[in-house]
Image (cartoon, rainbow, N blue to C red; front, side):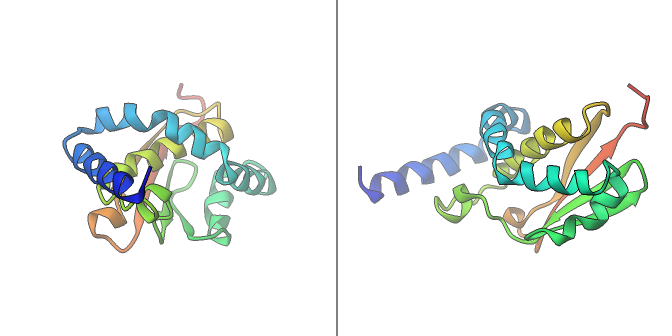
Length: 150
């Protein structure tokens, strides 16, 4: 197959994403996100989390040591932000997907990572802004339930 086919296909995919709501995007990207979370990001995060002795505050303060990501502690022990300075997703960089719906894949990937790192804590992740929406950064807020509030 030639590049023209893939260019046309991904342009149509991008247009289709724009028609989807967040729930549909979650379903679409769930398996893709699982695959991405198994890649280097998960091991990068896991190694750092172990170095931080499983302390979320320390982890989010140090995550900035990693490529293109910064962390912010909003409320110690509970509310954090992961900030990405670039969109490195190959669907954006190589296939030219421009829809901000693609950010749901990133959110789903973070869900997989934090379920693995902190299996005893419930949490929510919300995209607060994204490069694909025209912002300079992508910011995801992670809110953990208090330990024991299951």
